[in-house]
Length: 235
Image 1 (tube, rainbow, N blue to C red):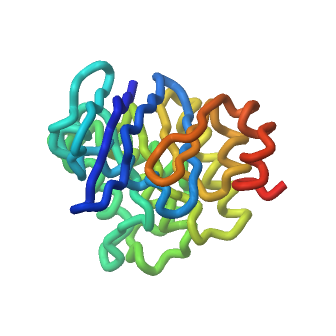
Image 2: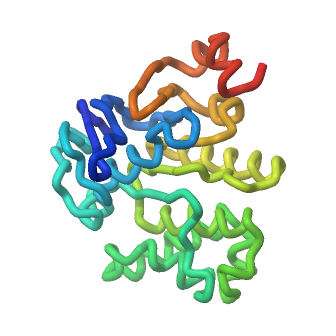
């Protein structure tokens, strides 16, 4: 589904990614683990067309998308839910959600159907659809951010730190929703600070340090790896 091949990225003279190669196959839920600054967000920004790599290739369903603009990525089925939610706080929940459907704006009937599916997934958003997004709790704002991404009709969904700053109970609810989205057929690439909880729902994971992938494996392998447990799980 999504494949990065030897991708490098520079911010001026600083090299943020060093020849990163990874893939998320159709129907997989893949987790990126790593400390702040390890390169997780750089991978997401590059893999969604927001930043152009300085080397390597990015493919979506076998198609070379390395030079494609962000709107083209969405049209082809890849959508990013960014770190920090990036909502428009003064706009209503409904308007924030509908912004996610902008590239599909001509399909009003399809968007209306999808909006109902988002409200079924997050019932509280139906109740608060006319409220300003900035008036919602952190967990509810994250629901809006995920819902907005779903309005883009992703076949592959990139989720960057969706549980950041949320209470443990809300984290559990958000990860359960992500698992439901994946089980419904959407490929998910997830960067998550709560490594143990993320690995519980993942199929595979990659570990990043300093813009390099230093380890990869299936969920069971990484959960049982002593170094991973010490560094990211705390046991």
